[in-house]
Picture 1: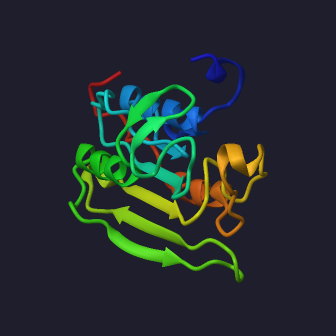
Picture 2: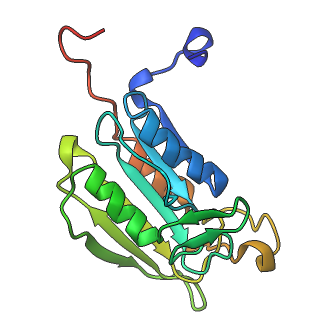
Length: 189
């Protein structure tokens, strides 16, 4: 609400992205502020079992998760900082695909590791969604609760490994850059 009063902001191109608890926040914002956010990205987060998500419009979502995340278990379970019960990462993407009324089965592809010992990334893309939304899940094999392409911000024992094979900044921005909120319909304020 305050940023546009001080800065030149394109309100049709506002996004939310975050890692871990920030990723949970991004998911929550996507559910609650679908009319104000053009797209969201959640890194190292999954849908809480108790979260009710009824956005006012289909919200495009990108998820990036490590398959060896010690904080937010990839297969679902208890998130370790907040003791939050989550569904699996893949079920989270599928659930958001249902919310956005996408095709039931995702298109599957893979990004190879850059070098020997690197981390392969599986990409599930839910297309055919309402209002041209899309849900994309990057599953980074062997990565932890980390920002791919970023720093190893805490010891591996606590958060797992950081992949340098995918750059989260680049893939999230390429997902966000073409997303805009729909123009208001005639008669709406």
